[in-house]
Length: 363
Ligand code: SF4
Image (tube, rainbow, N blue to C red; front, side, top):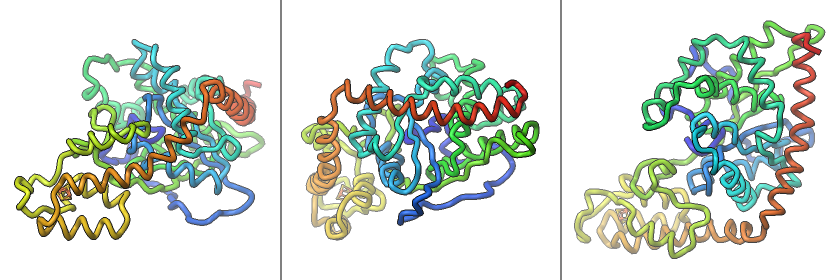
């Protein structure tokens, strides 16, 4: 999953630990209240973001910033857990991701956008959590073995990779959020954070009070978004449509997109429910266009080229304002926004760390 904080995830959605989720909420439509609950989420600096990142996370975050007190961060320390051998792209990729955050509509006046490594408390809490977390919890995380098998050519038998759930738990717990917005297949990652918080709270308290509240899952929409080869859109598959793709590039990519394999000839009828282009239409096209796609495809009344053209039209509508916003930011402005956000995040995180140190009798 590239669309959120928890990219090391298993896409199977298996639960990491035995205990089921205690609490899950779905994303509300309306503004909740003026005393906003806090949410936090982040994304690894993978470079320019794609439509899958947008639909799976960013578009939801943009809505959340008016309903919650939001912290959104770029998880550059997480990049080190797998890309430690070549760190040269982390800073440029961080800037690209920040630009895409802003282009998508995150507003630094309405949410806090920061870089994980700029907030040193993200280095301290994982150490404390590492002292109390049983090794078996980390070894049982499904993605631990999966990623070791999938990322061929990278030695992931490292302490840092095994311990990434502690980095992730710290990212969340430092801000004491009520909610972590995730898609359906990401819930298990919040659960291990809850388990770790629970264990910490069993050992340490301040005046009998728990210090690390267990965050709840805030279920956000995460529509099925295929890449150009029909598999899930993912940078690692090389099948993405980037938020920055110019219109000509976007149309070129769609032209090569796979379709319903039953439609070999123009005269063969197809089924949009078995076609990745159909999936794009379901997410992005108007009901009128979608009806034309179903009718035309099932009766062989339209060709795939025409149908793909309609999908491209819908995507252009989505991407055009994003690209216009992106062009309005200079690198200097982005750096300033990140610095300001990191200052705000640091102040909030330090508040938690003071309580943690007190609870552990280290202060
Ligand atoms: S007409 Fe559209 S939905 Fe049908 S197979 Fe072709 S591209 Fe897919």
